[in-house]
Amino acid sequence: MRGLMMDRPLLTTEILKHAVRNFRHTEIVTRTVEGPIHRYTVADSYKRICQLANALTAMGVKRGDRVGVIGWNTYRQFEMYYAVGGIGAVLHTVNPRLGPDNAAFVINHAEDDYLFFDTTFAPLVAAIRPQMKTVKAYFALTDRAHAPDIGVDVHVYENFIAEGAESFEWPEFDENTAVAMCYTSGTTGGPKGVLYSHRAIVIQTFACGLPIAIGCKEGDALLPIVPMFHVNAWNTPYTCMMVGVKQVFPGPKLDGESLFELLDSEKVDYSAGVPTVWLNLLQYVERTGKEFRYLKKGLCGGAALSEALIKGYERYGVELQQGWGMTEMSPLGTVNSLPKSILDKPQNERLPLQLKAGRAMPFVDMRIVDDAGEVLPHDGVTDGRLQVRGPWIIGSYYKAEKPTLTIDGWFDTGDVATIDPDGFMQITDRAKDVIKTGGEWVSSIDIENAALMHPGVANAAVIGVSHPKWQERPLLIVVKRDDADPSAEEIKEFLKPRLDKIAWPDAVEFVDELPLGATGKVLKTELRKKFKGYALPA
Image (cartoon, rainbow, N blue to C red):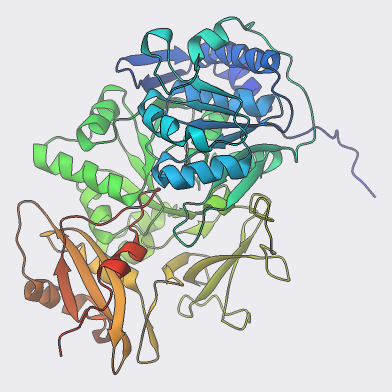
């Protein structure tokens, strides 16, 4: 027997219309690429979104067309999120940090029909333009005074939308229609396309708005440091509109000073970004003696959150939460939202739980399996390959040549994890980064987190290097803080009481900086190349 409810499609335009009806005075603030601060309301944004939708339709953009964008977190890209998807087209957010070859590859692979870009990326667009196979027209996300030269005619965004009407009759279509696409960062092979549906985005938006997830509410202000070209800025452009949160877009300036200035001047109480950004911001505050007057909570994802970061921000009254997800998960999988009974405990008692990735969002199932695919217990001790399934998790890569899921319908994340009886998941390593030593698995993440507790360590990464007896042993690679000069032996002694003996690194090497990938993660593939053939001390 079927229920007798209305069958209305879950479309992102319904989030937009809800925001206009209920939160029309809520601000959206941007530090623009051109320099000045731009400020308008949700009601103002709606008029421009309608103008863009009308302009795109008049130009001939139709349902299913791919519209690429290479841009920073700004109000203009925000407008594209709703206008492009709202007319039934697909917004392809291109990560400029992929580099020219990969950027050209994903644009061609997605078969983008149109390409929008911030002026910062004009040299990149000019460089890859001769390789473009499907792009019909180029659009600079700026005004006429700042229009760049890329060697062909470029439409100017402000002029392009100016002729469109400030109202639009939004079409209805199947909720499983694609709304956006994003490519993986390509750290484990070539970039792979992930195609999101309206239904998946809307359901995840409901989950993101829960107190156990992002947890913001009307009257709050959120600054997404995580780029809009990286998995929809972790869904924040949709979540903020659903619950009435002020959005503060940082534009191209993501250094500690610029971020602090916006956090302070716009009274931001929530932010989201990867560990490297949080680390830079913390070091800026420590160096300058400034205080966070308004920031209360931050979401950290993309890589494991360290004890040093949690403690560092706690000194300033900021709760840093670990989140976990993937491009293939739209991206939210877990958030470490702890109950008050845990948060009220002394720091040393709650830290082990704070370091975990958190509990699964509603509708997200998680399991761990061994190499043979046998399901393992959720006892908090046994670790195995982490697999997931749910309504906003990938079913197949775009143009996939082989199955994306397991035979029984789960997505293998490539992470190794434990899950405890209360549902808290902890990533112990990436499957490709686990160090296999003497028949045991050693977590590179545990060693890195311990090293980051040293006051002279600014950043750290661990890779496995060959050993004639133990197969692999850990090599710790360290970036020193500017004001410190620890020795290798000092760091090794510091780690001994903090790690099991099997995890003590055999050697410590110092570098000026760690190679970072397109999403801010440390590129261990590059470190393995750099230290290929490394000879451990006898």
